[in-house]
Image 1 (cartoon, helix red, strand yellow):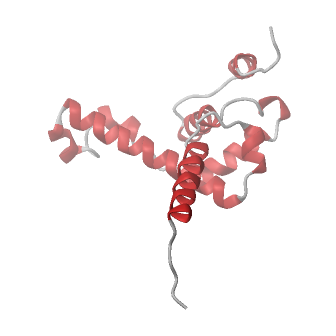
Image 2 (cartoon, rainbow, N blue to C red; image 1 turned 60 degrees about the vertical axis):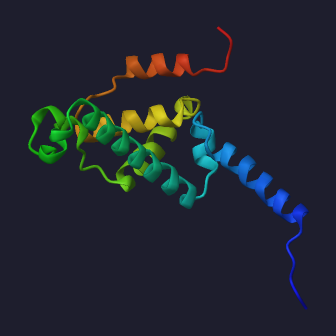
Length: 142
């Protein structure tokens, strides 16, 4: 029996790929999404976030002064771009952050920034700042 790929199968497959990549490409995920994702999706999101941030940092350095790429680890101006935080640390921090029901409407990408800032010691997020974020991301009309 010979297998044949029909144009309908090809078109359907292409449309599914486009639709699924559009859904995955959304960046306005919140705690409600995070808490419903399986561990594999959480890992993929965090690793993608880390890769994207690192690629952006490298491209910014390359645009400013390509020679800095040779001294990346020695230049104190670039030290803030380096991080020893692991994907697992970020995931645990995000889990902890979203364990407070009041934080679940805050965008995931914002939460990852908060978790990264606190884990690296770059910045603390006091309750007053978190209240402002909760208000900003609230779905309740003001």
